[in-house]
Length: 253
Image (cartoon, rainbow, N blue to C red):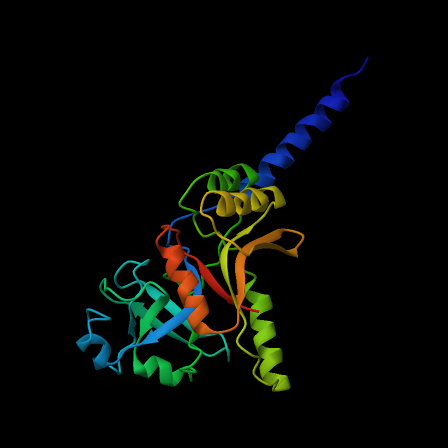
């Protein structure tokens, strides 16, 4: 019997699998960082009231974000209108956990931030000026994340699709949608990973209203919500902070 052909096929299959999982390797460090949430616009009163413990000049292009190293270049985007600006991370500062960044008045003005809904994305850029996109995890790696606590934020961002959506929204001049947000714990590549994470959030952290959405064939989103006002989402977000989760996104529906 000739075993050469089956053996070749088997080796080809194993090599293909190895390549697949190599391509899906995940880098969990914050050099590849992207986070969506609400910004806090700095003013002197925040400093006087000790809500923020460091000052930002109102014309500065410095932002505070304690997930990133000092002087890291970032792209700050107003997710409600698609406008963005390049900035740098300032020195470590204390500010309320709910906010994903503290920004200057200049940045708020140039991005035309809605003060009642200051929804932004903060994303690292590399030295060549290219924006850094995140990678997915293999199921084995995802399961490790889902089986442990605290949970690392896992995001699979399709930056092109989001840009197209923003362009279409601006072009059609659609009316502003009502306040409707979720707290996203993770976007996972495998449904089993999402189910494990959901079970842990409910059983071990006593969280309620946890759901899973299939975003596409490769993305299962684990989230809490939705919330129809900023006060309610802030209350829940602050509770989650006590559980020491990492890099949680706030997503507008």
